[in-house]
Image 1 (cartoon, one colour):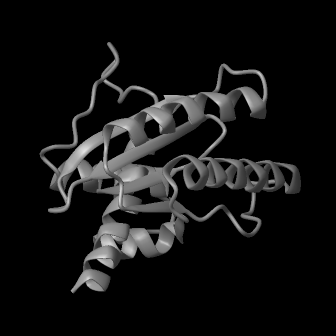
Image 2 (cartoon, helix red, strand yellow):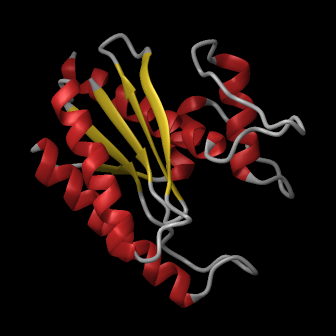
Length: 174
């Protein structure tokens, strides 16, 4: 089974695909209400320990952290925090599952899934709509106002990381 992880300090999402590339699990952990990076990491560690007990994970794929500034989006402090947290979660996955994670850029994962980006449209929204359109097993709950519940777009991001990892895993296997 393939584990795909989309890491952020607000919501970290996990997708597990079986050996046929079908969704076994696709969940988001809301971390935004936890006070510090260590409380967030402890929450993730418990979740990953439960995954390890429940599923026979054979490969771990994690979205690479943001590596450069994007105009109006990320400060040096934000990038530093994300890099640190990505390292912590990557180590947790390695330590608990016993497998070195492989890192995939968001752009590579989107390309692997056939998602074309257009200027002016947020990547999370494009990926979310593409996954909704193509994956009948990707379930989404909505708020009373008709919006996807928080974490839904993070789940779609973890799904395309898992799908890209699945494609790599499958090519190495054959």
